[in-house]
Image: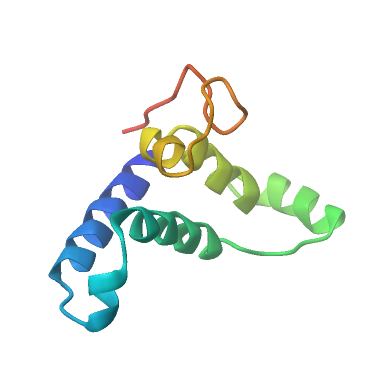
Length: 100
C-alpha cells in the first residue's frame, strides 16, 4: 500500500505541474498535496455495520478501508509534512513501516 501511495503521489505531482489551466496557476503545492491525500482516502470511503466489518475481516484478505488508509497515511513522511502532524502523534509515529 505504501508503494501504491508513493507512486500515485508522483503521478499526481506530475499532473499538477503539467496543467496549464487558470486553476493550476492559483493552486499552491500545499493545496495540491492535501487534495492528493484527501482524494486517495476518499477512494476507499465506505460505511459498514459492525457485523459487515467482522464478515469482511473473516472473508477478505485486505484490511478494512479505515486501516488501509490510516496505515498508509501514518507511514508516509509526506502526509506528516503536508498536514503538519507533530512527531509521535497518532498520524506521525517516530517509527514508520515501508512496504515494498
